[in-house]
Length: 366
Image 1: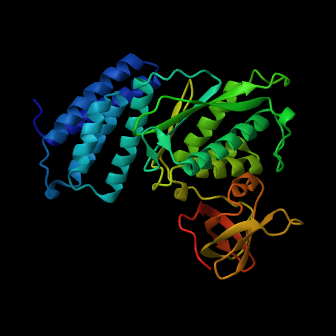
Image 2: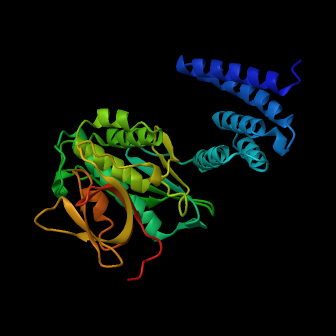
Image 3: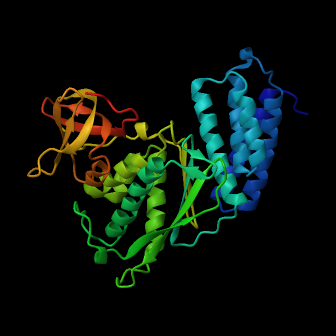
């Protein structure tokens, strides 16, 4: 009989590995059984570790592993309890962040199961959690900041799948085969959820191709969440569509302050977007010059109507900077025109090349 942490943990890892193989081989029932056994062994291992600082980092790592296995088994209550116990000890900052992200993911999956949300192939559900959410409501600014780029993704992904070259100027209404409609989903005090339904305009020959649009969006966001931008770039091929997808996902992503978690789900797939917006840097493949990092605040506006690739930034001391807007980033910066923002990027002495753009929470005074 196994009676020490090491033996129990090793057995849990063996069972977990076998569950992974079974899942890969198309044996979901066997995978579920093996995962549950792994969860039980890892939970036992965690319970044997004393709750003291000297037990770290082993204690928090084992508890995090047990909670992850509970999540895989859809044991939501057990997963939350294991996460709570792990955080009550002395976890490192890295493990603490992993536990917090897992806790949000558990809440999201549990919500989808308990609320029994049944989505059609033409629907996409947006789920938000954080300080901006209370009693089933959300601060409008935080909601619209994510709804706007999500709508852009729907439009641009539709155009890409139809074989349309990237367009800087939005398509005419009649050129879009789908239009988004909104419906409120069941919510509670800890989250806000809304469903977008793509409605065919009826006048376009491609109205039967709605489901692949949602599939492509979730696949792309999942790649970014897993830090696989290279895979996304290879999949999208077009620099404009890639930059636009990256920038839109940047704005949909949680900021770690007002919004801690963003969940997206369809009839086929769920994606928990836990990667912070500050971790998603815009990509400039054609930049070949010496530049210095810069972080600066100001008001964003048009710099030169004759040169649409440039936008302006007016700083509190009336300084002026010009920011290069690469193909695909037009929709991204448009949302921030006239607002106080914080810009991060590379400065070559003349232009700023964007890496990050965030709305400034507290307006600067000139």
